[in-house]
Image (cartoon, rainbow, N blue to C red; front, side):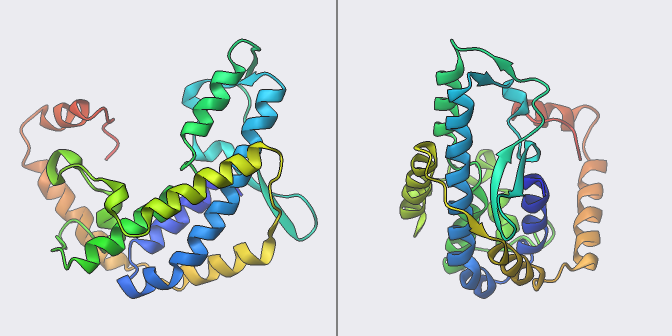
Length: 232
C-alpha cells in the first residue's frame, strides 16, 4: 500500500469525525504514525549509506509504501527511484533534509491535535466550507486565519519530540516491525467514521458558487500568491 493511499483514506474519513471520535483515536493513531517514522529514519540512513539522492519533487507520500517485512509484520520503504542518482557529495545533505522533515509520516496526527484544540475552544465552524474540525484544521489558511504556533497546541510539543526520537531510532538502524493487525485495526476504526456524501456535495456547490463570482484571473492570482496550483 502506498502511504499516499493511506494518507488520503485517513483524511477523507477523519474530516467527518466528531471531537469525541478524534479524541478516542488520537493515541493509537499517533503511535502508529510514530512507528512509521522510525522506518522513515531507517530509509534515510539506507539511502545515505548507498549515496542515493532523488530529486526534491519526488519527495511525496505516494513514493513510500507500507510493505511486509515478514508474513505478519510491516515496515515502510521508498519506491519509484526513476529520478534517483548516486551522488556521494550530496547524500548527507539529502539525509539531513529528511531529518528536518521528520513530521512527513506524522503530520495528520498534528492536524488531529489542532482540530481538538479548535473544538475545545468552541471555535465557530463555517459549515459551508468545512465538514468538521479536522477538515478545518487541515485547510487552515494562515493568510486568513493567522499563523499557527503548533507548540501552543496541547499535546503537540510532546508529539513532535516523539517523532524526532522515532526518526533518530530508525536512522540508527533500529526500526521496529509493526504488527499487520495494528494497521488493520486502525483502518477499521477510521472506517467507522462515515463519509457524508450529501455534505460533500453541498461543500462542492459552495466552492463552485464562490469561484463563479470571482473576476477573471482572480483565482490564479490567489493561488499564485500562496505558491499553489489551480487544481480545484
